[in-house]
Length: 277
View (tube, rainbow, N blue to C red):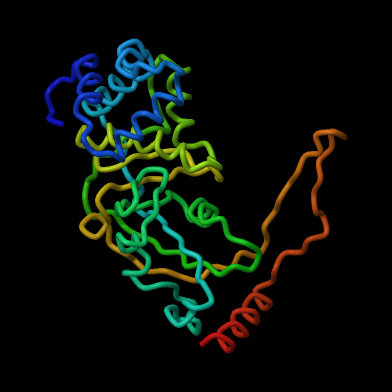
């Protein structure tokens, strides 16, 4: 996409007529099915107010973009037992720079804002959000890496959406922030991601689906955009689950679970290292 002013109707028509990539064509169809049962996709787009609003909103933030990255961002990866030799247990240092960044393309699966084998860089604006995002189990060991932005990047802000249409703003937030159980919904967020990317943005800021912080996805990798400042080993000391009994209308909580102490965590890590190294 160029920087000229976008005509929403023409842009929507170009989406339908210009999608040659089979993956994004499927994303487009699933996106339409998500918002409407109309089988005529062109008719749906021409008459769909949300999609027209979305195009206009992306155009507006392209002109007035005030979203800046934090001075430090965070990224996590669970340390598997066969990866203990890749970390420094004695000094509690996690993965090195290469293993803290986005994985090799051949290992990348379809995600919220990326296709299969597409190397986008997912980060969080605080350590807690980054840790929760990897969904650790009790006593998992996690490598927490921290990075500093080295470039001014153009970020589409889907957290602080300043638009009078609060209904559409919430719909846009939900596309990225809802915790999906079915991978098909990633096609919807992928389609919106493509619109953002085609309009010259370097990434997207969106609400975390599992914590109170914000996540960022940076397009086309991180190596020329972020400097790795280091990493450290974190232990998941307590995983709290709360449940609600729909029949009895009461909460079910485990009030007896004790937190893991520092000494206990070190003993477990030492035992694992002796066993698997």
